[in-house]
Length: 141
Length: 141
DNA sequence: ACCACATATGAGACCCAGTCTCATATAGCA
DNA sequence: TGCTATATGAGACTGGGTCTCATATGTGGT
Ligand SMILES: [Zn+2]
Ligand SMILES: [Zn+2]
Ligand SMILES: [Zn+2]
Ligand SMILES: [Zn+2]
Image (cartoon, rainbow over all chains, first blue to last red; front, top):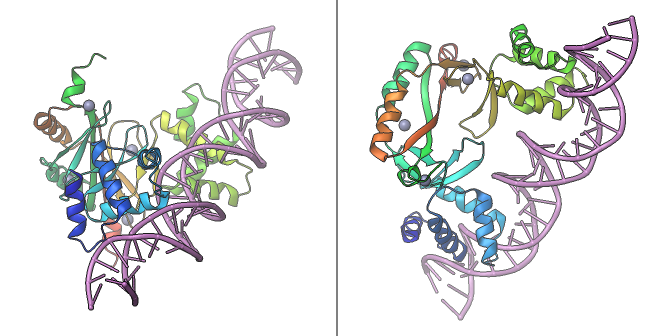
């Protein structure tokens, strides 16, 4: 899992440093979305002396490479989620935090219709879906 | 324009105070999206002695009443946009900042399809569209 | 018109996410 | 092994937003 990340970075003319390996491992161990503070805390707990700035720089790097994205949770928090470098949208489980990805599933017709009605020329869009993953649906409310 | 806001607040068991009237006027004068800092600056410029906290409290109040929403601009900035209290989405002009609203235009079928494929039970979604408004399309790049 | 009291306000401390700077360390390559 | 571009850590700094608390004010009842 974290090998994928490192392999990708390797092929992008980027150095494979100690802190980056460790952060990649921490991220893949989380599996779903997380906040920057979560990652910083993870690193602190393991007493790897990784600085705040390095964490943010690494998140930026992954984002540039297209394997990480920002998501604004319904409660307003700002989270990061690892993902594939193709255009897609996120399904975020509001209970356990797991994230699935979906391709467009026809949203292009929605944006086209919105453009037609409004006269806007649409350049980009952002769609996020929030709910309960299959596992969490089985848990009693 | 700002009368609408005040009228609405009046009907919601909320006090019609001086600062609220003034802020309502400033907001309606802006017309599109704005940041909290913009509003604070507007108020400061007029030397109404309105405190930061009051501005944020008023924005929260309007949000609770459903006539204001948060939008995260593509550049990551956090903006507020006045709008109708029904479910809808925003078309934000990235050049002049004006905002249009669109109803769902068929996004329900998109979310339904995503739910079917993923097994998620979808509770809410967020869709934002960014582009150029009709006016700004006429401006040379 | 007045009062009483719940509610709203302003000032400023505070918190948290994210950025910047700069001196030091290190990966990758000759 | 050594050189150099690149990455790092510490900590200052910024900007958005919240909290506290003493004071002010809208509003409903008289
Ligand atoms: Zn779940
Ligand atoms: Zn899409
Ligand atoms: Zn809206
Ligand atoms: Zn425009």
